[in-house]
Length: 320
Image (tube, rainbow, N blue to C red; front, side):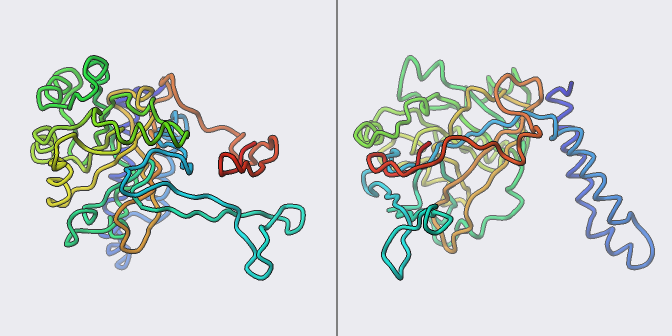
């Protein structure tokens, strides 16, 4: 059974195999260097050894019309997509398919990825983020114990250093998610979501901690469970990040099932041209011994059928 160290070592080997691609391609032009098939097999072997037996944990909230959102933006609206010629919704019975129309009042909604252009237009928008964000080492620092005593507790440099004494130095280029368990309060009830989004007491990440993580540990970006970085009047942490070219994740979920170290994170988001926020999907890829999560299986394709989806007008989306 693979350990956390083995998972990262094999994944690192896969990345190392891909790095010399340009040099190898140049060599092949002159009859030298490893073949394309050799490099491909290295990556596939690393996948078979490290990623195929791993546990996968979704760190993403479902998007629903009633999800918590800052009062300055307002809720989303889901409705059946209609045929523009008839004005009637597409139906399985009449058209053989259905589709959905989504109206979002903001790209700052649900589990998200903030590009620096959210605050600083000279820096990249969501479509300009590099494709190298796709898979990174994942570190999860928990402040859940402190937050249980103080709902407005913020991650400090002291917390980060205590974490490193126990788990080792945070790797450069990694993603650091801050576990507070705030996401357990997430709700799809519009009234409750409004109250939650307006609550001034939520766990944050201090500016000093952000500077330490970025300037001393050189991480890719950090993420947190609430909808904002901190509780200061000026949102000083988010302002500093954006104006220094850093992205951040917000509205992250299910961190209680992720080990502090030894996992990877898969990062996906729509490539909205000039977008200032992203509806993101984060998935932790963890060692097989991880209690939480799902393993790859033959049930992944074809997928199993269940009770038919149907539109629920009260909820504003399809349910089974």
